[in-house]
Amino acid sequence: MVLQINQLTGGYSKTPVIQDISFNIEEGEIVGLIGLNGAGKSTTIKHILGLLRPHSGEIKVGGLTAETDIEAYRRQLAYIPESPVLYEELTLREHIQMTAMAYGIDEGTALERSGRLLEIFRLETKVDMFPTHFSKGMKQKVMLICAFLSHPNLYIIDEPFLGLDPLGIESLINLMVEEKHKGRSILMSTHILATAERYCDRFAIIDEGRLIALGSLESLRLEFNMPGATLDEVYLRITGGGIADV
Image 1: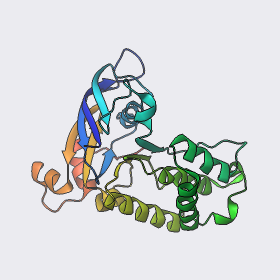
Image 2: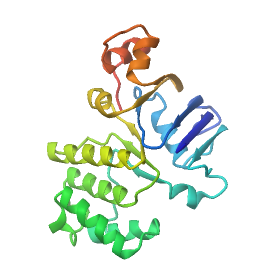
Image 3: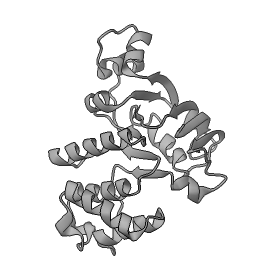
């Protein structure tokens, strides 16, 4: 079990934003985290990352909790936020080197992995440039390179396709599928439900801070008596007509 969330209640103050959230992610599984604005997706992700302390409940990644060893816990994870977060004073090469140091990756391995990733995202000629001068899509590719360099147990990807060009989207999807086949797992928050339907094994649907549905598309179709329905159609039925968003 890569991720275990057991009866998680939490938020930013004494008033909980999410309540009694429970779900697991197995090795080699892609799970879509689906919900409206304010449904609790971002709060759930921040708890998984160890940025918020649960009011109650427990989160384990690779059998570890953030409370027992936060550094070892976070090395199990790679997070790709919706908006790229980069260091103004560091070049692309230095971002890669810093990531390798943070995850304890030796120089030779880092060079091998980053060389392939730079080629995939067509940034091999930009390694000595400062990413702060890049376009949003190029900055997003820097975040992707650093994340996929680390080979964690669990990738957490928030709206991964925003800002990417069609070739970048194709490259990201291919990498996600490749990592899945290597036994690594992905939690992906997205409002592009057609893409989620195609690549996710299961879906965790959150509404008003609660997990209201969990399962594969086929199991959700059976549960809600909607044979042949798309993920969009199932989602609209479950939530009463809202449109999934970030």
